[in-house]
Length: 192
Ligand code: DGI
Ligand code: FE
Ligand code: FE
Image 1 (cartoon, rainbow, N blue to C red):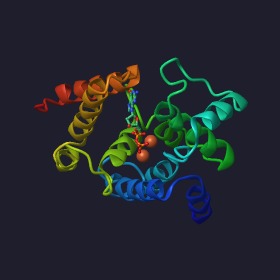
Image 2: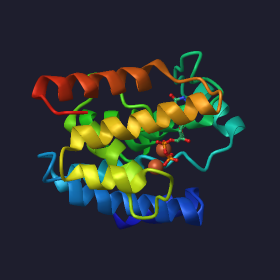
Image 3: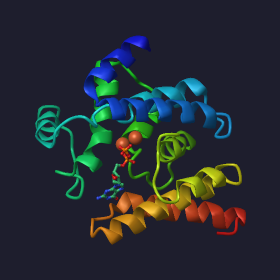
Image 4: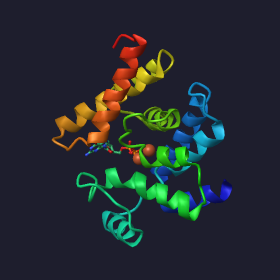
């Protein structure tokens, strides 16, 4: 783990490294709530933004060299490419072979329908880690203790509203993740 952290630090900015440390702490704290092992939660957190420091040009070259497939919405969008690249690095350079951990890394930005508990945990840890400061973050933090699906649903709604405000393309997975969480809340009779 120490070796991974040294390599990680070389690949991302100081600010990004501090964010990742925050996500590791949050993932650790959330593990019990999600019935996920702390080790797997921490491992996914460590790698989730590993590729965040790459330039768009490097991302495109890396993807070509390693035959990574992106859909039309993802291709050329750094925000939507860094998860899959991080997954590839974790799997190929660090021998991470836990598929759920790899999926949590790949899908941490958009989420997806039927996402696993570990995938949800990493998305949520990314939204609420202690260094995050955006409008609505405290509301999401407060919802975690009430219902973590409601907290993540609220977080996705915030992202989607923000993307629409900024005239950005909302990836279909982001919408599907939001709808999936809403269906869980409806099934459980949680008021939204
Ligand atoms: O990498 P982080 O900054 O820690 O967080 P992230 O990976 O969750 O999100 C990175 C960015 O991706 C964030 O500014 C919002 C953006 N994003 C999330 N979902 C979508 C998206 N951008 C587009 N265009 N479409 C999406 O569906
Ligand atoms: Fe990210
Ligand atoms: Fe992140």
